Each structure stands twice: as C-alpha cells, then as structure tokens.
Image (cartoon, rainbow, N blue to C red; front, side, top):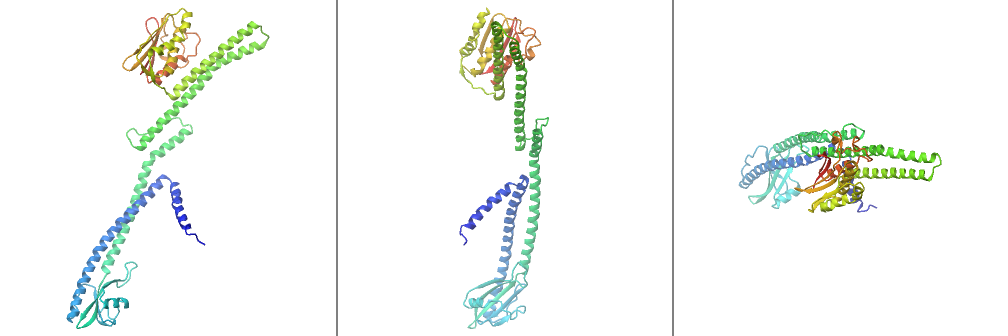
Length: 468
C-alpha cells in the first residue's frame, strides 16, 4: 500500500541532495553553472516573448484574411453568384445540413473539411474555427478554417472558408530555429565569459592559497604578494591575511625570544644552584657553612623568581599590548612607586625626592607603577647622588622622568639601553637581569608612548612619555 505522504517526502529530500551536490562542486564550476542556469532562464523568457509577438502578428494577419474571405463567400452564397477569388492559397466549401458538398474549390473537392460535430454546430448557428495540421512535426496541407451558417433562398447552407498556413508556419519554424541558435550561442558565450571571469577573479585567491601552503610547509617569506594599486575584495583579503601573518610571525618571534631569553638567563642561576648544592653534599659541613650555602641558594632562587616575573611581564605586554586606562592622579602614582624605595635610599644615605601634579590622567597604573619603580631601583643601584622623580602633564601627555647624579650611561650603551639583557658593564656592573629598561619601554609602547634614556649634565635621565 502506497502512503499518500511518501512522494512528498521524497520530493522534499531531493532539493537537499541537489544542494549538497552543488555545494561540493568547485567554486568556479558553481559560478559557471549559476550563470548558465540564469542565462538559460533569461534567454528562454526572451525567446518566448519574441516568438509570442511574431506569432500574434502572423495570426492576426491570417485571421483578417480569413474573415474578409469568409464575408465575401457569405455574400456570394446569399446572392447565388459565383464565389469570389480569395487570397493566395484560399479554399472553400458550401455544404447542406447533411454534409453534402454543394460547391467547393478544386483543391478541396469532395473531401470534408468539417467533422460531423462541427457540421452540426455550424448548422445550429454556432461559429466554428479550427486549425488543420500542426506546426511541429511538419504536416502537409495545414489550414485555418472558419465555418458559419448562411440562408440562401430559404435553404440553410454551411459555408466553410479556409486559408493555407504554410507561409505562417514556415516563418515560425524559421524563427524557432534562429532563436534556438542565437540562444545556444549566447549561452555558450555567457558561460565562457563567466568561466574566464570566475577564474580571473579567483586566481589571486588560488595564489594566496599556494603561498599560504608554502608558508605552512616552512617557507622563508611570511608575506603574500598583494598588488598595491588595487582596492577590491580580493586585495583587501590579501592585506588582511598579511596582517594576520605579521601577527603570527611577531608571535613566533616573541615565543622564540622568550624561550631564548629564559634559557640564556636561567642557565647561570641554575648552574650556581647546582654547584652550591653539590659542594654542600661533597663533604660534611659545619652549621655556619650550611647557613652560608642556604643563603646563597636563597639569593639565587630569588634571582630566578625576579627573572621569571620580569620575563612573564614582558611577554604579557608583548603578546596582548592591552592596557586598562583609568583616572589616576600623577602624585598618587609617583608616591606609590617611590614609597617602596625610601628605606633603601635612606640606608644608602641617598636623597629621593618626587614632584608630581594632582591633575587626573587616564593611564594604566598597574603597569606604570612598576615601570617607574624599576627606574628608581636602577638609579639607586647604578647611579649616584640624589634621585629625583618628576611628573608633568602637558597637552594630554604624561611625562615621567627619573634623574640621578651619578656618572651617567656610557655613550656606547645608550643606543641599546632598552634591549633585553643589555648591561652597561663599564660603569654599572652590579647585579641585575638587564630587563628593567626593556620592561619600561614595553609599558610605554603599550600606552602608545615612548621611552628615552640620556645623559643630562652630571647624571642619567630616563623618561617615559605616554598619552593620557
């Protein structure tokens, strides 16, 4: 037993299957198919409109010729005169109500043109119109006829007028052939143009894909060849991919630098730790010697902790570059950064002063406070004399400066002062990781500002200049 809903379910699934098949085709093939289907519909509609207009015009002319010929036949039958000559290819028959042929054209003779039903309808006064033969397939003696009842001398006659459709059918067949040829050539040309256009439009995409595949396989150049003189969708895609590749390359560089920096800087304290432990375990030690060993180990562990924190802070700033601005007074910011170093300055007999306004600024104090603290710590460790911290606000920019009265930076050190692990060996040889100034520059850049180191008179000055 066939369920009524089963065919509907099958037909409902068919478009989904077609869509799935269509979606698996290459993009160029889908575009060409879409162009071909669309052009087929447009060409079919245009050809149908042209055919309908021409057929209507030919049928109107044929109808006018047949109507004029039938009226002249009707008048001749009523008057009892000879039928008049009609248009080229015209035929006639005069029948009684029983279907006997009373008069006819020589080309028709006694062959009946009406069926018994049509004869009965015409005898009752109904107009009968019919085409004999078909346009396609081709049939001989194609006619268009019209039959009506006529009274002649008290008798009822059925007058049949017909005209040949040969010229009209031939013209329509020729029109169909020309429309089919023109539509086919147009469809082929449109499909070819669509194919070439799709290939040309997608060629940059394929080039980008090939380049990306090469990069994924370890290619040396992390850039796509994007034309600089264009601004279309494909070109903008190329620029977007290049920006993405730049970010990936920068991320890879940061990762390699982090690993290299960590392995380079952690090797020394770990080696010292291992040496201290091995030496302590080599022979029995006194309590004093063990205490010295543990203090040395504690110092190296603290150095490892400080180094790890500095590296992680640099990586966090470099990987995200994200800061959260909030209103803060420069005076509070400077006071927080300086407070933790007052005791160190007092023990060293150094003067530590600060000068900052109360005008609120929008900065990220979470990063600026430790950056400023690094500068103060560097000045106390490596500089000499008084240390001055100054904050000024001018034209929506915050400038933080730390100045000491020591020997200043060696001239050869200034160009690389903000490089990671850079140290001024000739004048600033005390302990440190060499990451303080690098961290300061990272904080300044995250704010969209700059960091600058210089010698000013009798000391060194490091300045952060950030928008606020």
